[in-house]
Amino acid sequence: MRETETVSGQECLDVQKKTDGSVNIIGEVATDPVASWMIQSAQVASKFTLFTHHAKTFPDLVTALRNSMLRAGVFKNEKTAEEQVVQVLNFDIHLVKDFRGRRYIERVTECIPVEEKNEYTFDHRKESTLEGKMEKFFDNATIYFTKTTNRELYKYVNVLEYHDGTYVLTNPISDRNIKEMRNNMDDRDVGEFDKFLERVWGIKQKSYFGDEPEPIMIESGEKRRGRPRLN
Image 1 (cartoon, one colour):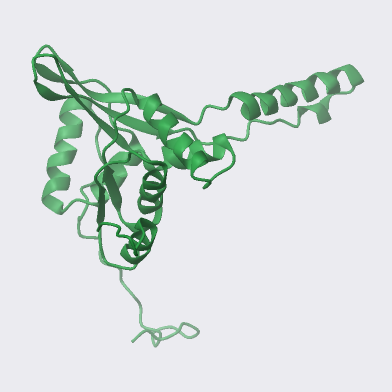
Image 2 (cartoon, rainbow, N blue to C red):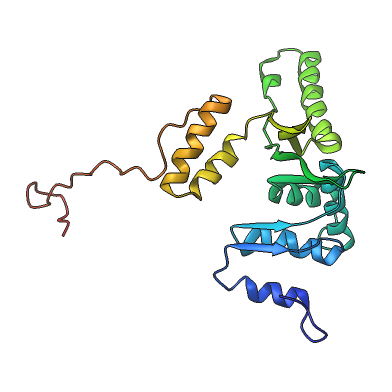
């Protein structure tokens, strides 16, 4: 789709949300409105979204998209905007062009959102002295201010890197993304993917996706009084 003088890009996206599309491809996220469309489409409009961007590093990509969200007026708080960005960035495939004119994939980076954990304690109730209660209170206060002022929203690791003319697998894919990837594969691809995971990273899956479930025996309601009859 392409916006025109009478039809905006946002209207195009709103129409696309009502279709049966599985993948959204956004050619270039170079302006703030387009960044907003990308976040929207990745969250609600399709299974996943592909887009291009010219950030040099992965933190630069997160920062650029976050700032676009703020400038577009979608969010007012930096942390909230950054949370939304890291939730939709699963993998960053970074391409480079060296001075010889060669184009190649330099790295594949996975974004891992950091889940919020409740680390507060109620140990102050066990303290018998005022000094002990105050010490436990300040422990909780320190945790609170750390989360408020310096909370880590994501981590990123390189899954694949280019070294001296060859590609090297460096870090395993997270369990969350492995599960999502398997859920979108057919039986044959799941089998090959599971073999790959075990061979390269030693990750063993419990069972292949698509295995036939064990039959469930349903007893007729006529056999025992009090049970509903299942037709």
